[in-house]
Length: 348
Ligand SMILES: NC(=O)c1ccc[n+]([C@@H]2O[C@H](COP(=O)([O-])OP(=O)(O)OC[C@H]3O[C@@H](n4cnc5c(N)ncnc54)[C@H](O)[C@@H]3O)[C@@H](O)[C@H]2O)c1
Image (tube, rainbow, N blue to C red; front, side, top):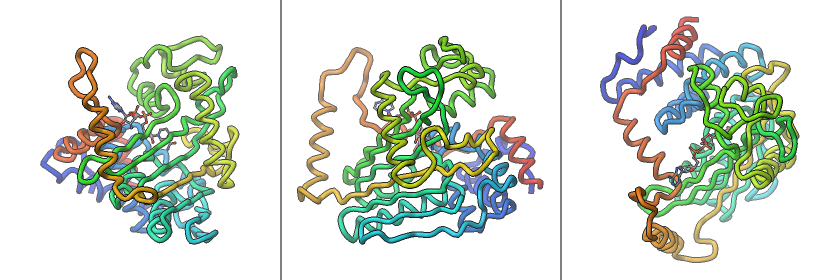
């Protein structure tokens, strides 16, 4: 069934369910198994609910295009190699990134449950969306998680005028018993590339100081920024972090690195071969009262005197959780151009 205007279906939760069915249907039509389609749909909807639209439905067509061009394998034979009780190495066989990452984080969680520490390296994967989505799975099982992934060139290394590093997010998640989890998940660029793509699609400007055009001049034009370079956070420090993520996700796992990860939107010369690294740890390895200690840690910070106009000092993850709760009660609004793409894909 094709919905002419999905935005019109605005009853509570109905939208999410219907959208989920449509997305599963689209992925299945593109050759994914029901299980893999379900994993992929859930990850896309989650991105919409936390307000990360640049990692949600706006990417659906890209994933489908790459499947059609045989650059994402819809029926991958994923191999999990046991290195030790704690450590696993996964060859994702060019699966859609959501599936490789879902298998990877579950493996890291199981390893950590058994030994206190789980390390999983994944190669031959693709763009997996939001790192927080995977960290949250571990945190919900009362485990600490650290997630890395590399991404296609977007950031110029410090001193260079050519992009090489991806926006390479760094994610750290921790449980805080019964409270909203601590999830710090940030790209190492001033702004994430998806936001620039959305601005280019919708004709908006980007903030000053986040990107240079191809001549090395600061630009607020998203198209010029896409043709130029994005700037890392904090100059050479951000450049160093991007480099570290490239080494951990790419060099270490056996994936593409050093500028070789292909842009999923416009490089169809081969699979992306992105790498991910997941580290999952039991929080009580060194102290028995971790949850009490982290709550005290946060309490001390929240009690600090605040800058004028700041109502509350937030810890990372609080803002996204609030958005998720609010958005979960509403229908998901879909921009017209994306709606058109979804309807087209669903009609195939
Ligand atoms: N797969 C990929 O290739 C890829 C690449 C880049 C980014 N991403 C994803 O994109 C998402 C967005 O990245 P981003 O850099 O735009 O994140 P962001 O700037 O929205 O947030 C970064 C972090 O800061 C925290 N934060 C925000 N406001 C805060 C406040 N007032 N006080 C305290 N903490 C606050 C957030 O909770 C978050 O943990 C991430 O989930 C990331 O994993 C994915």
